[in-house]
Image 1 (cartoon, rainbow, N blue to C red):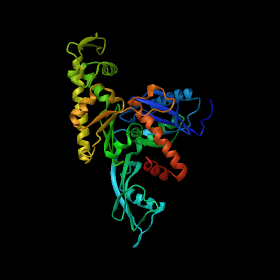
Image 2: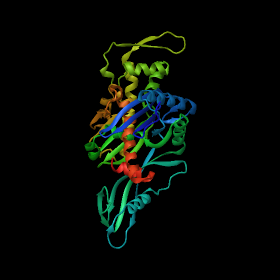
Image 3: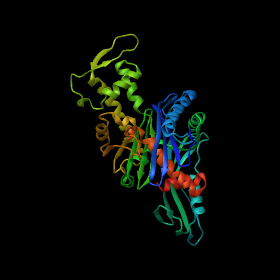
Image 4: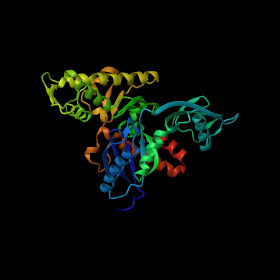
Length: 403
């Protein structure tokens, strides 16, 4: 197998339900699909690694499949980070440039951002992303790039995405043990936004809700910048668990029933429809009303969006989401969930379909692959910025400024 070329790079999404590796090639006309691999996740739960060896095996399987399709080896990758341990915080800082206005250079911008970054964090937490929201020159707010402008004082508002250091390191360790060097990490829903959100939505105010297996990750954009990130500890696995308990059936069977017969709206299922439900142990299967499936799923769906609404209200961003809510992730595929979201949130809601890559198979153009597709776009922007900046801080800041 040929060695990986410099114009090919890889994104790896280690989720609670599936692990996906996506290889792309950088061409003059943009990113082009080269290969991907998907493996059932083992050893991951709610966005964190709980059994290292099983997680490593799943990553290896996904990577090997991608390598076979691409005809190239995976040596380096950008890796997604998610789960309830991820938290966002807004900060503000600035520097004085003297008594008289003078030209702002890169050093002054970096100093102002570092002042804003200098907030106390617990020893067990690290910064995943440093996302400038706006610069303020003297009393002039709303500046996106102050380079070369004149001011006596430079201030900046930033959003910091933080994560539990141990959770991040365990994901990195798992990928390293699978034989892949981790070049960078990215918050999963922030990456997904790259493949599903439109520029006008980001400007007007929008919330992306990425409904994964273990949790629902949120990112809110206002005036083109990230205003809030957070995680709700409810995902597709909770819907499956509810069915397993409510219908007294194994989890694997509950997952199948959810995918084939599930609906978040009871009244959308005709009366009289029945579902064969396997029992636990050696007991025979039973026929149960299909409406019972929806009667179990609908309350959980309403709870999820009620939690989303309250989370955004507490952050002061709910009323600002004029473009509404965009649903992504495998959990958004549940029939009826769109209707529940609109009913609870009283906001425009749409399902996301990720922007496809050139030569990409149609099977990847689904909401559950939005994260890994967004990660290759984010990774490419970071690679380009790194070429200009030459350091990790510069590349991460520049990558988000040009996004």
